[in-house]
Image 1 (cartoon, rainbow, N blue to C red):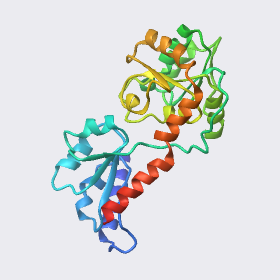
Image 2: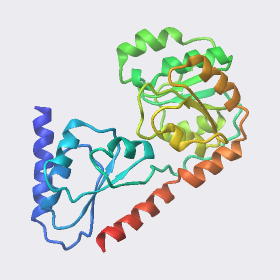
Image 3: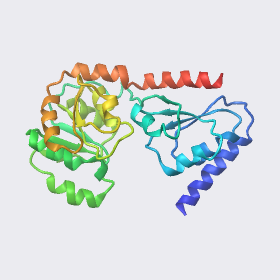
Image 4: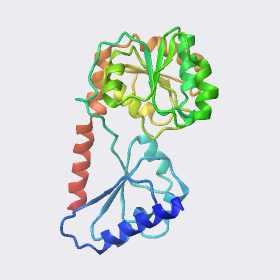
Length: 276
């Protein structure tokens, strides 16, 4: 029932857009993960840009390959663009951005921070193991999406120098990130981007994480230390090194590569190009 409800909602949206004249629209920018906007883009009176936020999925690949596909594609990282190139030869790369006025530099020196959804693929249990091996205190922040995983794999590891602080709002999280000595990023899958890392850098907080997905695209040795995927011992050593990285370098990297204004400028240039 939920699948049909979503299907009909997107179908009605695309029919409505197809029946409009050009007045009021120069470009449509699609950020959803549903297949119908891409599959029906050829019916629209104006061009569509579609941002790829995920690895390839069968339903979206099918939408691209079912016939003429006039969509202009952008991807949130070089890693994501490379994952899609077998189906989409031409892809712009426009990285996600964070608000540098909201995510402000802080003094550091506090516990290491891990933030994100509490689910197996984010690997908070690996973050706890790495922090304990590194001998550094750790705070975890985020909503519990998988209660069984939290109860069996995360909660038993809490205590002592490891705390779970719950689900915080952006202002609270930005304050914690600014005080953290480093940010741990521990994905068990190839993330298309990593907002947690971008937010940390904006707060002047270096990152220690697994060299997986888009993280090597987003980070360099001046602001982060990356370990082999799932290697807790190597990550622990990287964490000890990351806390010594200069905080101004982390902020400077965010300003140069992770700013929301930079993302907006790139999309506006693309809108003008496509509309012309």
